[in-house]
Amino acid sequence: MKAYYSDRFVLPLPEGHRFPMRKYRMLRDAVARTLPQVVFDEAPHTTDGVLALAHHPHYIHRVVSGALSADEQRAIGFPWSPAMVERSRRSSGATIAACRAAFVDGVAVNLAGGTHHAHADRGEGFCVFNDAAIAARLMQAERRATRVAIVDLDVHQGNGTAAILANDDSVFTLSLHGENNYPFDKARSDLDIALPDGTDDAAYLGHLDAAIDTLFARFDPQLIIYLAGADPHEGDRLGRLKLSADGLAQRDRRVLDTARVRGLPVAIAMAGGYGRVIDDTVAIHLQTIGIAAGYCRREGA
Image (cartoon, rainbow, N blue to C red; front, side):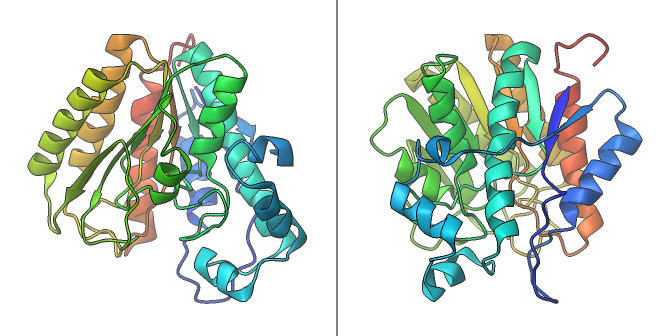
């Protein structure tokens, strides 16, 4: 199974910053140690033209040139640097590459990504460019898929994705998220399932089953982009839900089983994870990748 990484492009964050940047290198190291069937490729650079499939050219220019206002940069949550720009390009490139690989192998992963708070004209919530929206649009432009479903199971609503694709009937946006969690002003996805604080495995999986049934009753995708956030976990400091590691494994299998029955390729992005113990977040992401590897069509994978 192909896995695309961008952890070589590290954001220079101030000491004490709450974003767990080191989890990405930790995750790649863990995959390398435990999943020999996973083949690593560095995430490709994404050009301005490809970014413009989902973002306004003026916004792209201001990001690239460092011309964002202090308020805009504060909303993103990262200080501007050339490394921030390049990592954001590579994170989108990894999801694009995972989509292309999934059409061959059935499933592929971006070891980062899931930057679903980025809007067409702004970034927020640690998200600069929206990798899922960009990749969906590019797969359509390359005539690999006419209809794409974005299944967002991060604990935070994919508000940027929903806003970018609000008037696009060719992409179905599904978000299963915490009702009382960030962003506090939600956008409108094609299907939003807002969960109360403390939702456990059984309740979550019941809502997920119903959401998947609704998705396929209303839409016929040719590709699934799956945001497999680790932040619904009970140990996440920003999550507010109560899923166990086993519950998250069942979540992943439900998405992948659904895709396999229908013969649909799946590109997976890691999305959020802010565990009180960073090793727990890495273990959940690693679990997702290990499960996904079992669905790969590549010989020996």
